[in-house]
Length: 94
Image (cartoon, rainbow, N blue to C red):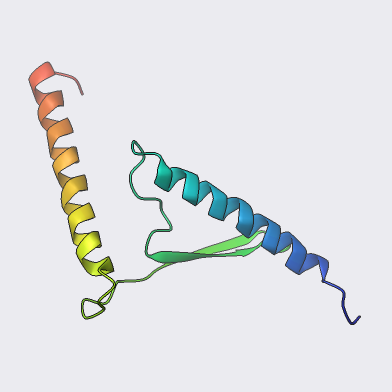
C-alpha cells in the first residue's frame, strides 16, 4: 500500500478543493459579503457524505487584526440590513 492514496482521502480532498474554491469566489464578489467559512473551518468526509462546520472566534490580543475586521464587518452588515429595512418600510414592500 506504500505510495497509494486511499479513495476516501482522494474524494475528501477533491470535495474540499471545490468548497474552498466556492468560498474564495464568494469572497471576491462584492455583492455577496463574507463567505460562511469566514473565521471557521468546514470538515468534509466525501466518502461518508458528512460535513461539519465549526466557527472560530478571532482572538482580540492577536496582532493580525482579524478581531477588528470581524467587528467592522458585523457593523457594516448591520447597517446594510437596517438600510434595507428602512427602504422596505418607505416603499411599503414586505
